[in-house]
Image 1: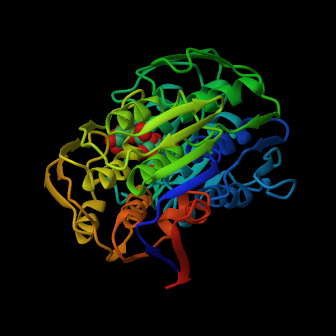
Image 2 (image 1 turned 180 degrees about the vertical axis):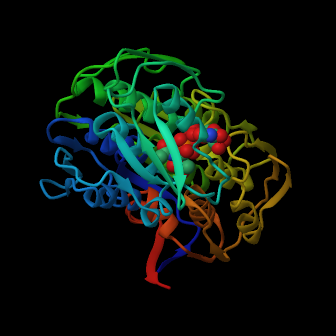
Length: 422
Ligand code: EPU
């Protein structure tokens, strides 16, 4: 297990390219199950969760070449799939394994997927996925911790579905299932996240008929078959936002290449309030720190609200801001695991239920820290970059699950980070 040793206090300068989006790449890999030919994905980030998804599809009997053709490219051929199963071993390390359920039911008529348990940020059930697929005719039994699923003999049928709450992977799962179902599926209260749109666009490239992407009402007309296709994964808005929070904390100026301007607008609007100067340069963005961070309040919401996946990084910024910030988390019930660790750096944070009141302090000071989940680990790394002295961050495998070489990229901008075996 690796740990990071961070020496704080170095401003960031230079240029860095944003990787492909983890949360778009995961459903896109699962979508390959639907295709009658190979699917080629480029701009694929090389990170832990994608390797896990690759292992899962290989376990099922698929051919997955990750990085074999070119770095950050993959070819997936799932046409010879022999074992439509997602075992507990793989699902427990990555909840997104549930994304194979819809495609397996649509393409192969059956699936066995281990029921995901709780995770660090909350209970995160998949009841809404199951309810929606049930409306399309699927049947589910629970056996030995696995969901054993079957589609009707003549396949899934289009249905009208209204999600009680917008779910990102639920919308993606349903869209993939509906793409090969008989008739029309209408999804109301659908998730509008850019990664849902990216998944839909890849399905369109494969021959699916989908309308309303990016709105909360998506309509899918099932087709007989989907073809293989080539698709470029969108840039990762959360990685981009993480770099912006980093430069706000350290000072300096950086250029982010291949910046997802529109997808990240809910975050960039907020970061401008905190004093960061952001200048679009075509597909890139120049970010300049003003030297001080102004406090601002944030409430996480489904897109186009402020994303929960940026809450922890924003809190690291507020810990070192001028003034008091109120941060409310409405998506996950337990996504404040970073609070106790940020306090170890000297942050002044009071927690009450789903709200954190962060009183900015004049300076943070380095400490040993333990990462608890993906975005929490990013938050600790950012705060350490701003802290006086040395921090050591343990359990960085959480970071490696969801970022492509974040410590390496930050180092290329001048951060002092060393990775050693713990
Ligand atoms: N929910 C249910 N039942 C369901 C599905 C969701 O109650 O069947 C609840 C959840 O517990 C949560 C809310 O609905 O309270 C929204 O959850 P959602 O289903 O949208 O989350 P997800 O699809 O499991 C994806 C991302 C997360 C991101 C959330 C919210 C992927 C692979 N994961 O998760 O990403 O936080 O949407 O935007 O796309 C991360 O990258 O760090 C990460 C956790």
